[in-house]
Image 1 (cartoon, rainbow, N blue to C red):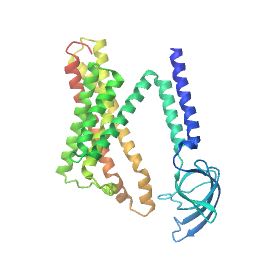
Image 2: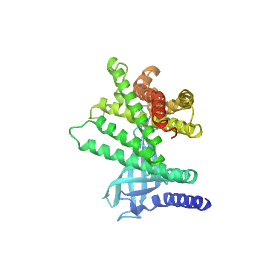
Image 3: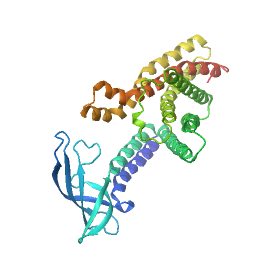
Image 4: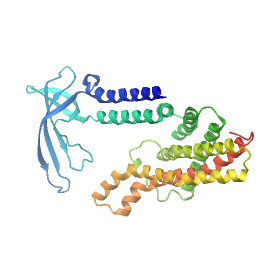
Length: 361
């Protein structure tokens, strides 16, 4: 046991070292990286007292490429609100483009801030603590995460290349594999796992159907699709796909929790009555129902927080700001919560019917 713990700690430590060192190996980057050595700032547009425009004149040193070590100059315009611009700071590392020589000196254009160091470090911390605390289960969790990411990218690529099938078809197909792949990797090929898979898929699609019918019956009144203005694909298909995939994770968690609880009760008390088993499973479901619904709500609301502040800072009324930014997020949260609620009776019914046949799980 100690040897296994040491192995996981060693692997996690190596990941942390790699996260700290790799972003500093600038030769790995195809895009030019520079470090700011000098900058000056002046105000160029003071028409808006709340959000004036500033221009930075910057000198930096190239850290990679054929011209490594040479100085490059460029300017950067920004607004304090940072809605559509970035304020650069001394000694910050950034990406540049269009390097060329003008009047004996190198010039360039600002491309973006180099943030991958923070991303690598946060990812390494996540991997380290997942392996340290979870050990074997942590490895399986990471394996399921990689599987889901790879599958999602594959489905999106298939949708991009397809001319006949809508996005909802690919996401619906993906939900089957997401649920099956995640639960089989985590819990193995067991009867309890398959009960959880069936329950997850059934509850998620039931929630989607109810949500779709509600949209049709109300003619989508109150739904604001402004956040999808720039999408060139059918936005309703994309929204329905987001309802489906957004509810899947929470429903999966509820389903496997109930199935595991029912399975444990059957193993400990093989002769337990169906009524008592149903009541015990229902108690498990209702205990986690509220917290999982809140997780969905907070997750969706967090993505709209910056938009809410931006709208209100620009003089929008509070009610209209909420209406524009939160109508779709609240529907996603409600649809996911509906899936969580439906998962309780569906999972209990399937668990009792399928796991009690032989008196054990």
